[in-house]
Image (cartoon, rainbow, N blue to C red):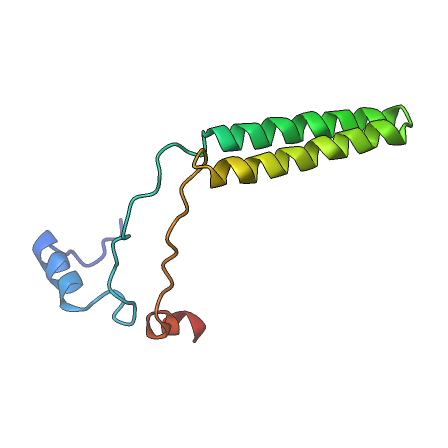
Length: 113
C-alpha cells in the first residue's frame, strides 16, 4: 500500500486559517428585507393565471375549429386577464413591490475581470 504524508487535524486547520480563501471578493451583505412568503399566491396572480389559461384554451379551440371569432374571443380573455392582474395588484391584492438593491461598481469589479 502506498501511504501519503500524514497530517494531523491541527496542522490542517492551521494551514487553512493562514490564508484567506478569496481575498478579492467583497464581504457578504445581508439582504435589507426578507422576501414575501406567499410565493405569489395572491388574488391578482390567481386571476391573471386562470384568465390567461382559459383564454389560451379558447384560442386553441378556435385554431382547431377554424374560427377567427373564437380565436379573437380567446385573445380578448387573455388581454382581460393581464389587465385584471395589473389592476388588482395596483389595488393591493397582489405581491408587494420589492426594493431592488443595486451593488456599487467597486463591489462587482472582480466579476468583470
